[in-house]
Length: 628
Ligand code: FEO
Ligand code: CA
Ligand code: CA
Image 1 (cartoon, rainbow, N blue to C red):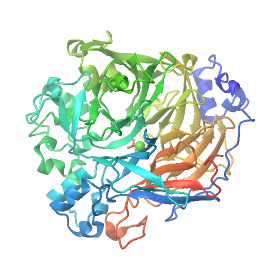
Image 2 (spheres, rainbow, N blue to C red):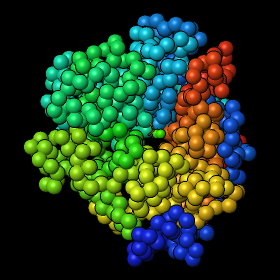
Image 3 (cartoon, rainbow, N blue to C red):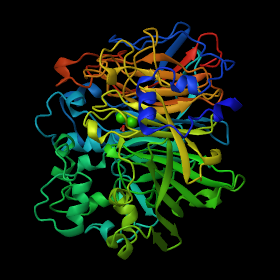
Image 4 (cartoon, protein in one colour):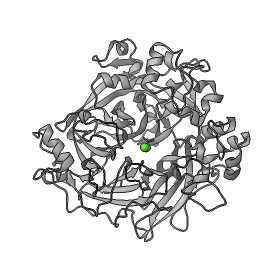
């Protein structure tokens, strides 16, 4: 694939030409003609499917799927949640059962094997849908409905085993099984540990916090831990900010706290720490990347504050040639930023314990994309031991209190002229192309005058994908080049900014429409697997969300999976032999106002009145690798 790395656009192109090229495939000067594909690379080994609105999982011919685990399945040896009764009424005993049962709205799915040959999935539980869980929730949940939702957040670690059909099922009662919820004890480490802003009346040391919330996507580290990401953490904090002053008020405003969605969960009605009138500082203890060790059930999750505080979508790692570890991260909000963190220390392949605190020291950067297809990483701050060195160009507040670089990361990025992106979602190093892929899900609020090279579409309702090529293909580099392999859309759309553009060229109607790219993963060949979030009932495609595969060598796009009504698809992941594809079917039925109005009760199977978020496995009937 050597030619893949040399086919960057010539840097002499003017911005105007670049934009025309990226957007419209200008005649005679398309990315496709300026750059070479690799026609000898293997083609995707399945026929594409197309978006639909069916109440079933759709796959190409020759594939099967099965449910691995669903909301409420017991991880211990006890009873499953009684969904039907919970639909009517929730008790304290149900809340306690939820602490031992698979949580709601599964997002990230991480597969790994254990030293004793077992197979584990680590699964995030991003949020809850009270309107789908409970028949009568009213404007606000009652005490037990709120508590059950809190315990359905967090993540699950669960052992799985192959079944006789070719799929997988979870192992009930495995000693590896574990729930971490919105109330589990977590530690705080890194530059913000013990900072005055992280201290609360109930926990005056600023070193511990109960719970991790809104765990969206995540990443696996080379040393076998998982970095689970607190995304929309602001949505749990309610109350009035009218009595707040100074830095506390300013920070909360920049992070959208208090938030109207707090009523949906109701935590702040029953727990003072979520009510900013009663406890103004609990929210500073959320919005972090949290490291979890699936192999150590007794070890508390650790909030790694050196990775900054924002709406963390995911945190994916790669080992640089010199052994340092680089973590790529997106802040999923309109006009927010793409970041990376480079560790001070080096990964030790044969010394797991030496890697367990690597993420507490290093340097945090934010991305600036230039219109000439170049870009740079601008340093926010470096942390080494107890010394924090902020970028000297940051305003006085950051020089006087350097830990603010990590607590108030968004404002530091503002001050450094970082590029405001169209909602950065997954951001991942592709080990085959040795480039970094960033999904930008959509941003309908971008005005024409605010477009730039990397976010070229006004009213970007369809989203796009950027590829970043770090200088020398080295993830620690501070300079990069970038291009737009995929502007999402419908090949048959009449409006230009809703059309599908692949490597600068429009496509024909045989290519499946795609929009709202969110989670990414790669198969053994380096193909880019893209899960989408945002189509059902929207102005985008108005069809079910799905999974697509971009072959970056042949410049080919196919659709692999379609979900059920209302769901997004998350956590695309492969087993280590690439014979199984795992993904999460999150919030099936979302969009319905109540359970009287459901478009789906997926995954069926029992006398159950509500749909249930679940993880599924997909495999080929003939046993070959999924993408072969
Ligand atoms: Fe939870 Fe950005 O998706
Ligand atoms: Ca996501
Ligand atoms: Ca999303």
